[in-house]
Amino acid sequence: MYDRNILKELISTNSLKFGDFVLASGKKAKYYLDCRQITLDSVGAKLIGEGILELIKTFPNLPQAVGGMSIGADPITAAVITVAAYNNIPLKGFMVRKQPKSHGTMQFVEGPVKKNDHVIIVEDVVTTGGSALDAIEKVESIGAIVDGVIAIIDRLEGGKETFANKGYKLYTLFTIQDFNVQ
Image (cartoon, rainbow, N blue to C red):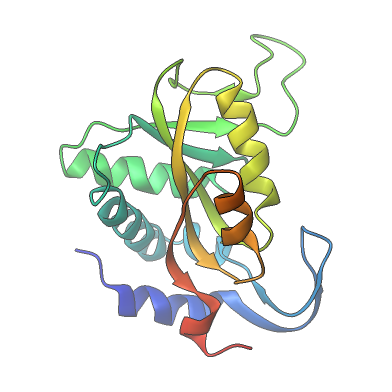
């Protein structure tokens, strides 16, 4: 059963770092959220899977699949579809590559997602939303329908507004305000 307080404590203790950092967006920051410390931990993965699945169950229609940009979204996807299976909820996962493989099917999107599937993009941390928008573009190029983005944490630096301006909604388990960080 999802325990938001335990997940928050795990993030505070293991993921939140202070110092001088450059983010994937290119922005400079005084704190960094290394969510792989949680998404690649058995307890953290279970809690993230439960929390995201709880959010998904509030949607008017359940999506057919969840996924996002490799490599950050891969453990999140695995956690969500595993928890879904334990709850008898049919949910597929997919991965979005930055570059297609140079062999085999040479696809950007890997996994059993197909045209007209309703999907959710998952993300660890949203700053500007750039990574998730890249995933959205690639998933929509195969004909899937993106019903929204779910992130573990929103840094509250414009990502939510960027998604809204493009017609997508951002759902989160936390915002940076939950950790009393300015």
